[in-house]
Length: 61
Image (cartoon, rainbow, N blue to C red):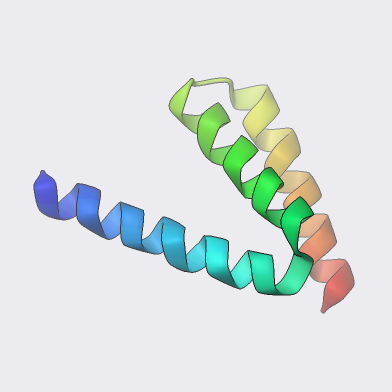
């Protein structure tokens, strides 16, 4: 269980760093909103945050 938590936090840190380098503060806020929505089980808010994040990342690429 501890290994799973450590791996998920490491992936979150890597994703946060990658998104912040691409989109700046807005991407970091969207990633934070996505993680909070997933933990709180607000699936509609998580889907909207993921869609906006994906749209911004594809627009930058």
